[in-house]
Length: 292
Image (cartoon, one colour):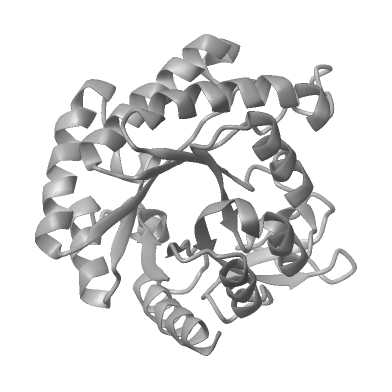
C-alpha cells in the first residue's frame, strides 16, 4: 500500500490564509507521503475557466516535489445539483473529469447525492432513487474511461453512507470503470460498525480514506464545539488517525485480505493542529500496514 493525504486535511490552515495548494504540496512531500489528493473546494476555489491552467500548475508542482497525484475529489449530487437539472449536473461533473485528465490522475471521486431533505415533502427512500443515481454515475464513468480515469463514490453525505447502500449503488452502476471509495470513519456517520462495513465493501474498493473519530453515544453529555451528530443522534469528533475508535488497522487488514494494494489517503478533520495530526497519522498508518 502507498500513502497519500487529502488536501482537505489542511483546510483549517487554508481558511486562515496560512497555506495554499502549493504550500500543501511542499508540506506533504516534507512529511514523507507518496502522493497527494486534490479536492475541488480546497484546490480549485476559482472561476471554472481558470481551473485548467491551475491544474497544470498543480501537476507540475507535485511532480517537482516528487509526489504522485493519487486522486481528485469533487462534489456531485444527481438529485439536487445544478438546481436539480440532472443532465446539467452530469455535464458539470464531466468537466471536472477534464480537470482530472490535466492533473494526470487515474481515479476521481464524486458524490452521488445527499438525498432530499426529510422535511421537503420530496423525501423518498434510497432504493427509490437508486436507478437515477446509477444512471448519473454510469454516465460519468463511461466518459472518464476514455482518459484512463476510474471513478468512485464514497460512503458520504449521510444518505448514501451505509455499506449496504454503496454496495447497491456499485452493483446498479455495473461498469468495470466504477469502484467504491471506502472511508473508514464515515460509516460511523450512519451508525455502522466500520469493520463490518469494510468487510462488505472491500472487494469493490478503488481507494481508501483513513479517518478516525472519537465517538460518544446519544445518552452521553453533548461534547459541544467540534462534534456533530450521526444519523442516529450519536456524537462524533474527528481526530488523529489512531487516536479514536475507528478500527483502522482492522479495516486495512480487511482491504488487504480482499486484494487491495492501492493508496490509503489520510483525511483528517479534527481539532488538533493539522500538520501535527497528519504527521502522527502517517506514522501510525505505516506501522499498521507493516503489522498486517
